[in-house]
Length: 168
Image 1: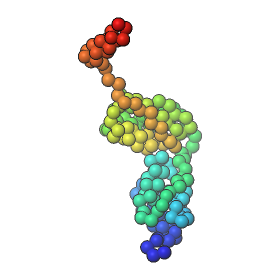
Image 2 (image 1 turned 30 degrees about the vertical axis):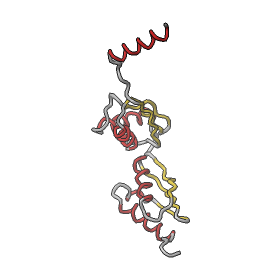
Image 3 (image 1 turned 135 degrees about the horizontal axis):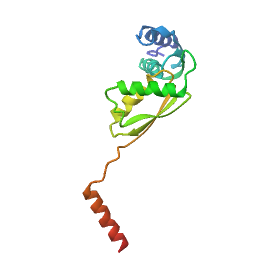
Image 4 (image 1 turned 90 degrees about the vertical axis):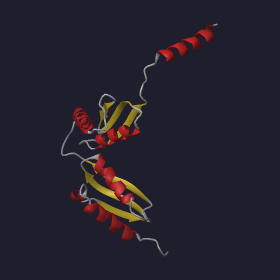
């Protein structure tokens, strides 16, 4: 088939990209390719690095899909509260995240749940990215709701008028 890139060529392109990337080159990540599908393997320190490897592999023309089997590991046992502390520190250092609106709700074996209220999708994504940068995080669940608005006097008045009509 003319124009189709061979699996071997794709494998070399993916491996090369992973080896030259400043954030990933020290990990010795591996890639195999079967019928255009990339299988990534190896160990990294953060979820952000795992996701970066997948994004890089997906960016190569000819790649049909990526199965990311990269593991996120730490240098030893890490407790849930330690992960929560690290995530909170990452959130605090990100200028796009307001800790009054988004914070850590729970951590369970590397899965972090972010909770809060904001209408800003960029802030939610910034919080997710910051959390993924923390040591020990293997997954980030975002449970951020639209911001709660305080009712105005006009809202209260109209709500009361509607209630009065329903009673009458």
